[in-house]
Image (cartoon, rainbow, N blue to C red; front, side, top):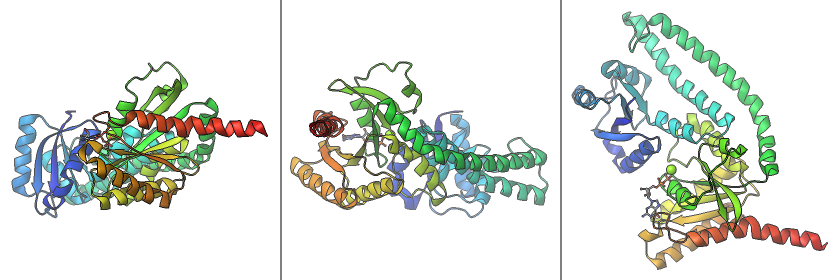
Length: 372
Ligand SMILES: Nc1nc2c(ncn2[C@@H]2O[C@H](COP(=O)(O)OP(=O)(O)O)[C@@H](O)[C@H]2O)c(=O)[nH]1
Ligand SMILES: [Mg+2]
């Protein structure tokens, strides 16, 4: 399949255009063309005019995927797929793809597959419904018989995933224990979309050691090893928070985010160039969500990123603001460190702070113990 896509976005979501581009980029795709929709058509989502326009873009550019940055009803989706004969993702499906590339555990992978099936079943039901009325042969290949068989297959897969998930939940606790016993120090990087997680991850792990055949190379698709003061540390670029995650995929999100529970420290990245109200809201949502999925007793360091975009006095003010708000919701916020992942500012202070929380206090703890 081509990695170029046509992005369709409702005019009233124009404020989220950057976010849409960012999410598309996150799954390794590129927007070839953006199409704006004033008012979705109830049957096809797109008007005849717009869908003709898209048809010619698709044909000329060899594009085989359309992303609609909105919620799309099964009827609209099926009708449009029949019209355009390309793969169509709505916002929910796009977000599920993002979870998928960050899914490190079997549990997360299964939760995502389950969410995908639940997202696909209504489409197939709608297709079957339409085929019964019109007795049209199948679209995109399979006929009525094949579609019915596919539907039954998905239902039985859904049932078997649910069974497996019930068993896996019990194993979560063992996984945390194993990770700890292996002795690897693990830092999970999280934060909202486009706060700069991946940029910071890359900056921190630039001088990484070549990853050998050790066990941890298979732990997570986005984990790299580096050293701070000759201590080995694993960093993971975990799934980020996304504005308004559809409720039906929250469980898949939490399972993917649960990676942070296996870490020794959470590095929460926030964008200091956000207006105060956004900054505070994102800090609150991030921290309370982490608590909700079970984070406790694990220290959090907040990286106040993108300080190259604000003045030094603003940096100090926002640092205090973030610190005050974060500690309202979580007591183990050990530091708020101003950085610019892009310009490489503050990275040494961040390393120092990570080391202090991860090792120095531990050494002191042990020191106290041994004097008893
Ligand atoms: N000005 C500035 N931009 C940054 C900084 N860190 C990241 N960015 C930009 O912010 C955007 C999102 O960064 P990315 O690392 O992909 O964010 P993620 O979604 O959290 O992984 C990219 O365009 C980065 O170049 C920074 O420190 N300063
Ligand atoms: Mg990223």
